Length: 176
Image 1 (cartoon, rainbow, N blue to C red):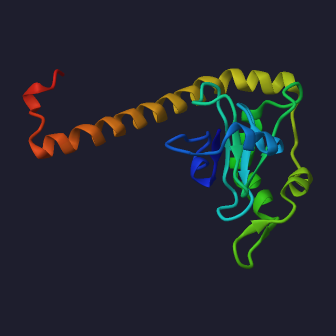
Image 2 (image 1 turned 180 degrees about the vertical axis):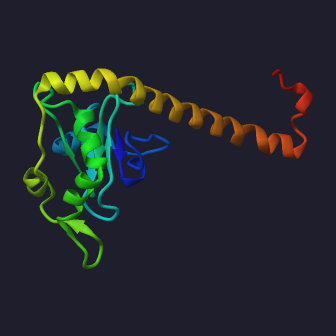
């Protein structure tokens, strides 16, 4: 099972370049650290303030969190996960998250789950959030599609450029 670390939380959504893994048996012993699509993942030690959501259509159907991460699973009858995600990426959401940070030694948030519950969040009625989601969903989908395309193009570049530079590949061999 793949392990989510802070390296996977650089944007709005989980990034999946490569993972470390643990066995399914070990993951079962860490069942409180298993996360799924729509869960929000936070870093509580090191690069605090990182927040990303596991999107639909990711490489795996479940993941396990490293020791420096914690998660929030939304009751989707009350809140749209993307709405909360964008709140935590806003200036006020970041301010609230960082207000619980301890700056001595490695920056961290003590009792992250308890402190997360203390953050004030004015949640509009679910029907308003769903109307908002209808408008925002195409933009978020395009963001994810662009990111995936960038990853594919980077991989293609990393494969072809060394061959081109070594003379192993001739530009005239490429069918554009």
